[in-house]
Amino acid sequence: SYRKGGYHAVRIGDSFADGRYIAQSKLGWGQFSTVWLAYDTQSSKYVALKIQKSAPQFFEAALHEIEVLSAIATGDPSNMKYVIRLVDHFKHAGPNGQHLCMVLEFLGDSLLRLIKYNRYKGLELNKVRKICKCILIALDYLHGELGLIHTDLKPENILLYSTINPSKDPIRSAMTPILERPEGNQNSGIIINSIEKKLKQRARRAIARISERQASMGGVGVIPKPVRCLDGIDMRCKVVDFGSACWADRPIAEEIQTRQYRAPEVILQSGYSFPADMWSFACTAFELATGEMMFTPKTGQGFSEDEDHLASMMELLGKMPRKIATSGARSKDYFDRYGDLKRIRRLKYWSLDRLLVEKYKFSDSEACEFASFLCPILDFQPEKRPTAQQCLQHPWLNMDNQTHDEVMSESNVENINFRLSNLQIKLHK
Ligand code: ADP
Ligand code: MG
Image (cartoon, rainbow, N blue to C red; front, side, top):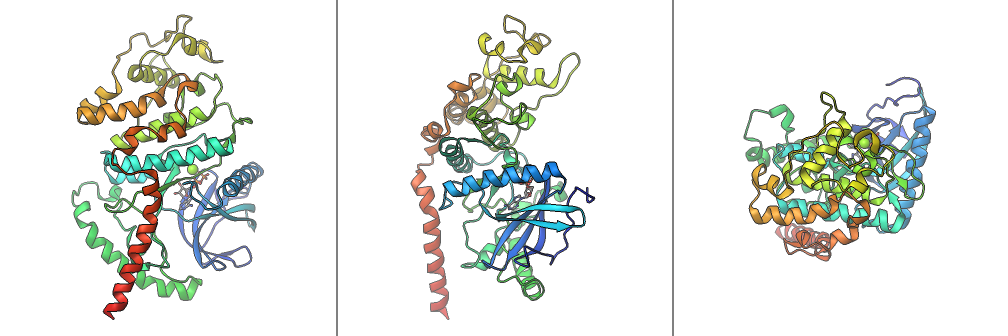
């Protein structure tokens, strides 16, 4: 894809926007873009530089994303809503064409990666609660205040971040990230035990590299590293990737969402709005807690992926009310007039709490409480699903006895701790 209309090839040390940003290392890529860690010489901070492919349709898409991200930034000046922040944007002319570039705050690994680190076994419920609170605060802001539907909520599009300020505590911030990728280490069960040692080794190496880099790239201080899964790190995350987001009164696409997180009204084409994001949120919360996707539909003999998807939904959540099943533009493809699936006749009904106990080994009470949080969000009737605001009131979220205000004030506590430890270092000297 590195040809006319495609990605822009970047080399470490390349500069952008008249020398303001200097590329440091590649962070990731998507269908439309590559994303680079870059040093912002103006603010002396590290940022994520998202460089879009240059063909007109990608350029247009980036314009839309910038419009959405600008509205998000304007509506939340203090950056408190757990949504990615656009810092700047500009055009960059390269050999493959004109690329729109977005400068975003630099965040860490995605929740998908976090799930992998946990070897698909699910995270501790207290961590799941914390992550859910962040996502719900973000959704409440997007839906309630901006009227924006994300349309592609999933673990991959939620990124962890560190509340450790690299300029205040460079050593700890350089240490936070440093974990082996489990992919390269499938057979060893020692990853978790060796984390501490690796952390320290890699931090030392990272710090040693800084001076070289500083000299050659104009970077200052320790390069912040993404937050990986580490115990004791405050679980905090932000919603990213607004490439397909739309305003609720101006839906763009008919088919939205990544398959496994797709709401029934989207499959049936009965019209969608904010509740479609809530459905994806519930699927995401389930996946965080169990390590496995809630629905993994497949095409089978005599039925389509859509039909398998609808069947799995009903097996877990009960039969879809006839009125809902038959009211979409595509209902006739899947349902007969009685509201029964045409090609998958026998369903094996389960319930969410039984699934959690039997397959995922939740205790009865944990399963019951978690299911009472999720089930209302998985209502087939979108209008009946609770809003993000309503979900934030659910007792399950506050079972660790930590209120939203406490979560918000934790960063203050962290700051105080740093100041204390700095003071101790000074005293020691
Ligand atoms: P696309 O719209 O092309 O799918 P994304 O916005 O999803 O692009 O970004 C692609 C990848 O780049 C992400 O999956 C992630 O790994 C990385 N990335 C994106 N934004 C950031 C960021 N702000 N900080 C760190 N990494 C990021
Ligand atoms: Mg993406």
